[in-house]
Length: 288
Length: 127
Image (spheres, each protein chain N blue to C red):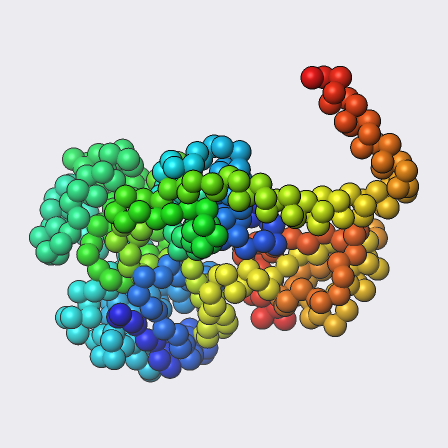
């Protein structure tokens, strides 16, 4: 099994006081779907671009199966980065771009490409710069799902896509992943739409990894409890609270911990906390 | 199939429960093939590994069987196993909840027995 290890990675820009990334450590294993989250400007795109060697770190290293990825052809042929910037000639027609990518990769999946073109209703005779923002994303999505790479990094893949096309993307991501498992790293702000597709959560904040955990483990210890304030409080005694809201005597408490061993009062409701909420609470707390 | 993503129950257990329900109601017939993990994953946007984990629970419980290269099928006798098990759990799942809720509503034991009787009488009238 291949893996990518990010070790002590840092990125500083010349004219800014704070480093963007100060000490980033994590491992990407094969055949998992990671969600990479963080606020605007947290450094998600920069981190992805350094993993794919589009950009050099100020310190630290990225290893593919133990070897540095920098100018490493073996590693870079297995890592695909779907960039937010456009890397293809703007005046080329979509089908010329597809033909170019196909010529770069021996096992490029042309069959899947044709299926996706149909499902997304993409006009391949159009020039890239004549396409809408959404369709420019779609061209890049199609390429990233068809390249035969073990690690595929998707930076805001659904930027500008309408609801229907986001569905088409999610369905096809699951389908191609099931048929041909590989690793995806997806950064997005629309957490609700992928919070059941991903297997692992990576949260980037203040230049470090704030959270790196399996989704199932997170789900087994992130709850929202509501009911009459005194019942909620006595049930949750000793638990460290992430956030609470109160409407009169009705209280909702959000926390990240195991459920207490005590008996659940009949007046109290237990719900799973949504990942999106959990991440927002953690990020807010980090700033206080 | 329906999933409650606010439920504190893990998704893979919900997958198992939903598949079990479908066998119980006869939506998935004994001996018939059930949808693949990919189909279920795609439809509900759930990670395929999670779906597989739920499905494997039913394989371990002898409700489903995998046939190499052909897919997953409902085992003969699966429905009967589910009915037996649900009968055993009826007390915990329904009766204890009923008592709990009736206490909150200040309904006595006699009130509840009367209501149960009324329910059965209505049932008979209808049939």
